Length: 284
Image 1 (cartoon, rainbow, N blue to C red):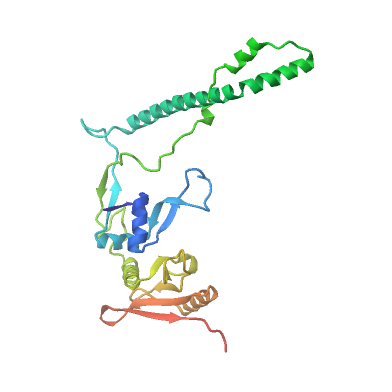
Image 2: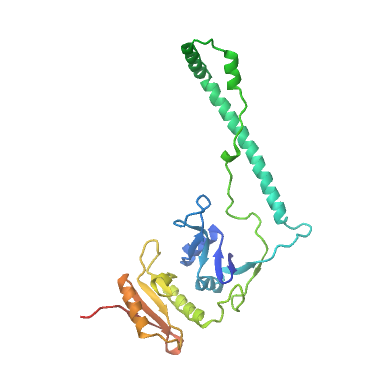
């Protein structure tokens, strides 16, 4: 079962396996919003978590493939339960120290083996330099330098950055059918209209993503967005909501400017959805 963590209306997936299943099995795209562990200060390439649209999260919940959960406040564990956060931090620090000691031992052994291979060449090089300076070679000093202890700087230590918690925190299930602070979308007319359109287009085999950057509700792709450009900009029109002519003309011109067709989506007679495509042709 896929776990979708919700917080103030945002739906996040933290598991890489779940994110892959969501895309490959259910044709849902989402958006990666997390920083990369090695480059946390850039935003050109992003990683987990995967943020889903409210409609994507609801679809997975309706299909029975996912459950919406929220984190609970940390409480002292009872006997036999998982350790507290302080204990986890202490265990992590202990593992770091053990890893440092092991890396220092391995680095020292590798340095010793390398110096043993190069000992003769090092001695010959030093002897030539001292001969050039008119000094007498001191083999005892050379041996002492070669056998000097090695200390690995802690700044050079390799550290494993965990991308998932070994022991996930406590969570409780969220009812997506009723509004709550963590899931406020349920029952809202705008969300219900968007979800009907999303479910219909997804059911016809299209891929959908958020369309706010093009002035719509969704971008509609004929295939995976990694391989195709969007063909439509879906604009959802809830029942009774006004649609000014100026806004309609602006949306149609924008869609034509980015080589996409504006798709007006609204409830039709008998509960069915009506789709109307608009393209700007200019004055001819």
